[in-house]
Image 1 (cartoon, helix red, strand yellow):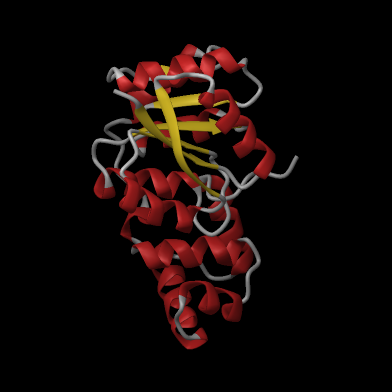
Image 2 (cartoon, rainbow, N blue to C red):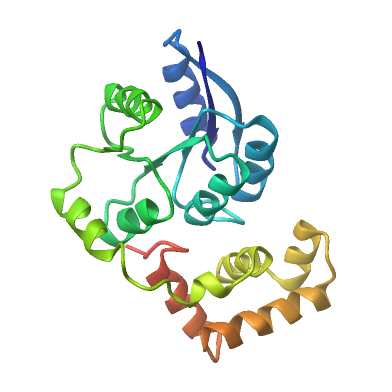
Length: 216
């Protein structure tokens, strides 16, 4: 039986490359692609792919948040993060959020195909370039209490990410089909739940939590 795959990345060339690579394997079929996290959630719910391949840093809703929602929308879907982010905190958080595989974008094409086959068989697959410390770090953190981010609702997480990406209340209202006033109410609740006082603290929190990347 052909395994169905959904590709999610905000770079068109990456999506095209993945589609071409996967298309060479008769056992796989790419059934769709998305360029942002919100759109990805919608397609996952509709298409129920066997495998989701997703970048970590996505506009509107990041890959970490998408991973959390995948298991609710499509429990049978296996997930592979395909990212440039190799820092241990990013990888560990992805695993904790339900990723079945984590592949770095600078690895060879054969490794991605191997990862797809592995996760379809129920195994975890980490890129060979990732240290064994990733696994050890993940195991040591499994019992760590969830942070305050887990108290945020789905809508609050969307607004949190869009806020630190620099989007205005009007931009967010249009994207989420709500009023600017509702956006402000959600933003106020976010600050209160996270115990933050201003925008710089919010950005610092977002970087630490892996919601936005650290600038080189």
